[in-house]
Image 1 (cartoon, rainbow, N blue to C red):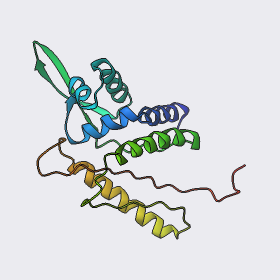
Image 2: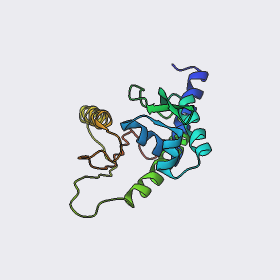
Image 3: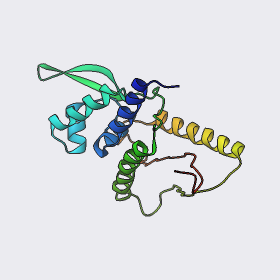
Image 4: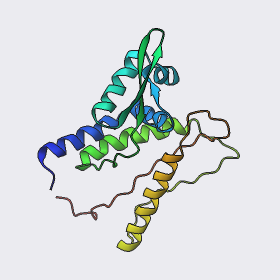
Length: 180
């Protein structure tokens, strides 16, 4: 059982991700390490704003240092998304709701970038009742697919790559009427 401190850390980490800019930063830094200046340029942010969000993600363990580089006589830290970090699990429905609202807003932004013709993809939305063994198998398959695509991510605009959006959310639900 988690201690109160562990739970607060989990909630803090999940809430850190529940910001549209931070979701974009984590996506950018999955394929390559970047500095605050590079993140700022790519997302159209001020350097100070990019640095603020990067610090928040580093403090909660979502990003890890990936070296430094010399820039005009100074040093710029580079960060990358931590692919080894286990995914957060929401401690409660309220915390999950904060995260899912941010993800929904990010999906709407990405939908504006969707290729209308010639692209491949799939989507699904369902509230279902399934046998437990099917549920466990599907969760494992989605986890494996998510891990594979994250590990295959390359720096943005790499020749020969396709810009894609991937969002998954699978969770068990209480039956209607079971909440007090």
